Structure formats: structure tokens, C-alpha cells
Length: 494
Ligand code: ADP
Ligand code: MG
Ligand code: MG
Image (tube, rainbow, N blue to C red; front, side):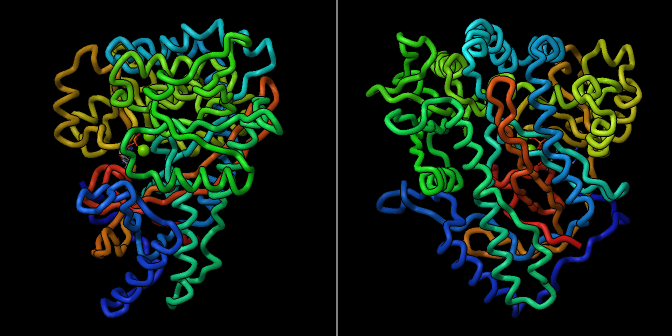
């Protein structure tokens, strides 16, 4: 669905004629190829498809955002980082909120089981002073045209991707801006994710105690087999080496299950075949049930959770980032339990969209106005989004499908949440995919990265760590770049 015709139209950052666009697209694609703004192509036509690459899907010009709102979203990120940590620490809360969803969602149920099965091991880690939690989060927003506010779409606590490619996109727009009239490069905010994300990983790895001369610790990046977005990940690996002399190994959950063991000596150090200790497990997989085709992958996940390596994320962090928890925190009084300063809680709430539980018991009791919201959604499904407990794009229900699912009813709705549909302003963008461009009416989503490192009770890192803008055609409901809906973009502050 497109926003209503009377929704405000933001002006584009620059007006371009067709004659101007062609050469600029050429420059943009060449720059992207030269600077590693790439995705894997996996085209079997190539002699070795493993090494075939193409420029990442991108927007030719940055997208205008109000400076004041953008800066507020940056400012609030450390509060979201702390919120995730506080929610994750309250395991009875996680279990209470997620139990009804888990009854109808096996994936949530399995994650909760890992949480409870590892409780003893994790308490022992804490007692030994070797609990290291690493958050590399991305809080996603859309500008809500009616209120002028950024409203949070979701908060990703696992496998938040595109941090490195987004920093390169900022640089690309800086370069192109020098060639376009009307684009003042000083209006492109600095994007430190290419440094801030590896630095957080390195800080967590160091806190684990497995790094340093003679210790031989490595970072294990947990990946999906056949990942197309491998170059974003490879940038992190390169930066870890160049900035910190840290070595990264790429392993799937199945590889971990097969080759990693907990050292019988310590009982908690994860060692790889060959005896190498793991300083940090960083997940770029494990967020979807598809990543766990058998019990072996779950065994791999559990081994990680029991280990004294730093984890990004812990199972509790992953659960704290679920849609169901996002919805529960929006309930009156719920967020406030986790945020000591009421002014901070009020600031966080500035970013909350309308969110309602669909658990039939909550709807019957009208918790947080759920009954009225369901009635409205049946009448005006276009004003809502129906979300299951899933990550990775392409899972939500909209419009008629949303109405159908609500009509169907049943206990299974406990594993869904109902959300206010955010209506962002449309822009004109030039979208470049596979070297070809297309001019479209578009909508954009802003992501702010946050990094957080906690070693037992000591918070070592808590900061805003750069940003991502993804732009999609206004007619598309979903917005993932990896899922093929959107392109990489950057903000232009007005
Ligand atoms: P996922 O974890 O799969 O990325 P999201 O909550 O981010 O789930 O939803 C996927 C996409 O759906 C978003 O990128 C956005 O384009 C669209 N979307 C999600 N929630 C809303 C909303 N409340 N209003 C408008 N669009 C939304
Ligand atoms: Mg997500
Ligand atoms: Mg998302």
C-alpha cells in the first residue's frame, strides 16, 4: 500500500535530469566496485562463483531527514542499549512475556529452552567473573509523516547487518555530492560504523581474557551457508585484523557443533579443533528457524551459550529483541520497570509506535487497549501491520491478509503482535541495482547502530555506532536489502 495521496512529500535532496543520471550511475557503480561496496553474486556462469561480486543495491542520492529528529535518535541509542541489557537480565520477565507466544511458536520455545538449560552454567560464569555480553544492535525507524517523529519499527539484537556497507554508502554519497549541485556534503552526518562495530567486538574479545600475546584467541563469526551479504561481514573481519590484529574464523552452527568443544580443564572455554580458544562468538546467523535444520545446530548454539567467550548476542539478548518483547515494553508501565530515570523512559517512549498484544486473554481483558485496536484493524487493516515472532524480512501480514488472519482468530495469535502502520513521507529516488537504474517514489527506513559491552557488572562500551538508511519503492510493504526489497542509502540532514 502507498501512503495516502495527501501525505506530505519531502523534497528530494537533489533534482537530476535524465542526462545527468546516466554518467552519475556509472561513477557510482565504479566507485562501489573500487571501494568494496559489494555483495556476492553467486552466479554459476562465473568460473568460480564463490568470488563473483557485484555492487550493492544503492540509491544514487541521499534521502532528506530532519536533523533534530535524527540527532535525537542517535542520542537515545545508549538508552536502548541499556534497556536491552536490563530486559535480558530479567529472565523471569522474558519467560512470562514469551511463554504464550512460545506455546505457538517452536522457535521462541527452543530459545527459551536454551535459556533455562544453560542457567546454571551461566551463573557459574558470572561467579567466575567471566560473563561478557556484547550488543551490536540496530534500532530501526521510519519517519511518521502525521507526527513528524521517528517511530521505531523494531530493535534488532542479533545479526544486525549492513553496518560496514552503510558506512561506505555514506562515503559514496560524499563523493557523488562533490559532483552534484545542491548536495552539500556537510549535510551528510559522519557514519562511524566501519570503526565502531569492530572496536566493540575487539573490546568484548579482550574482556573474555582469551586475547593477548600467547593466548591465541579468535573471533568466530557464525554465518549462514551461502551468505550473499558476505562482503559486509568480510569488512568487519578485515577491520578486526587491521585495527586490532584479531583473527576471525567463519563457521556455521553445524561447524561449531562438529568441531568446537568445551575444554575439560576449565569446563567453559570453547576450543576449536586444534586447541584454539574462542574469545568471541559473533552471530550473523541463528535468527531464523531455517538456521537450525537439526538438533546439531541447537547443540552448537547451546555450546556457545555455555562458553566463557563473549557472545553477540547472548540468547537473552536475542529474546529481548523479539517483536513480542517490543510490544510488551510499550504497554503502560512496562518499559518504566527497566529504566530507572523517568525522563529517560519518557524519551524512549517518544519513539514508540502503537503496539498491541493479540493474545486472546489480553484482548479479552483489553490490555493496553488491545480490544479497540483489533476492532479498528478489522475495519481499517491498511492502518496496521501484523507481525509474527520472526526476523529477516518478508514475514509480516498487511491489508487483506492481515484482516483474514485476525478473523481466523485463535490462540495462535499469541505469537503475533499488532502494530500501528507508520506512514513515512515519499521521496523521489534513483535506485541502482545490477548496474541498471530506475527512478521511483520511495520510502526510507533509518537504522541506528548501538554497541554495548558488559563484563559481569561493568559496562565497558555503550554508544551510538553509526547508521543505515534503506530505501524501497513506495509500493512495497517490506524493506530488507538482503531480502531484495530495498537499496542502501544515506541520510541528508535538513
Ligand atoms: P524484520 O525483523 O523481518 O526485519 P520488521 O519489523 O523490520 O521485521 O518488518 C519488516 C519491514 O516491514 C520493515 O523493514 C518495514 O519496511 C515494514 N514494516 C514493519 N513494521 C512496520 C510498520 N509499523 N509500519 C510500516 N511498515 C512497517
Ligand atoms: Mg529484525
Ligand atoms: Mg527489520
